[in-house]
Length: 325
Image (tube, rainbow, N blue to C red):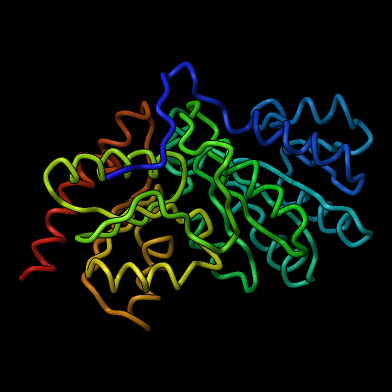
């Protein structure tokens, strides 16, 4: 089984905020409508270079996330393309009403970014672990929700988000640096899942830098055991790619979802809705099981909440037994 993954050492890893900031600088050089807003987290989100290049289009509102989204909606109303950013826990919980009403309901063009999703909040602890942000955002009509898995996918999907009119939510992995999965020849499209590997026995659907990487390890392990595993990077959770879900549910007869989020209301639920409506097959969801977060290293938190290749493989084998029973 051949996987589309660029093998490299840990030193080759890149911080996605650096890619995010540099891509915004590049696009802003060509389009003076692009503006950046931040809630006292410019260094964390890699947007200091944007401020250096475009100080007149950079706004740090301080620790006032809801106000930041309101300002962004106002900037959109007069023709700008605003990129407000904060931690995912604040982007979802603190700004939800402003984002829902002033941005999405008002048909504005606000590109909200939430970083440090799920367990990647690490030492900021349980209060900062956004296990529910995708679930909240999925309830907003017409919203695009995107979680790129590596630098290439981030650059290419961010460009599409920028020049597609309408509000969006970008879930941005901030730390640790991620190892590239794709090379520059790969193409991506919002709303279309990315097939990493084909397979016959089982389909794994994953989202985000953390869990796509773990899913790749799992698929390779299962392949070594003789289990032919299809792997899909579902970088766009909304609108979700129903056709690829149906195609591989039909082909493999079993689907396992993997996400750094509550198993309810996130990627797993989105896939479950498609399968229930159009192609019922055995489904297993790997993610946070109705719990709050806690403080710890990333390795500890992944183990604590079952977000590891070891646990994904265990759940995959259980799912195959259900399929065959």
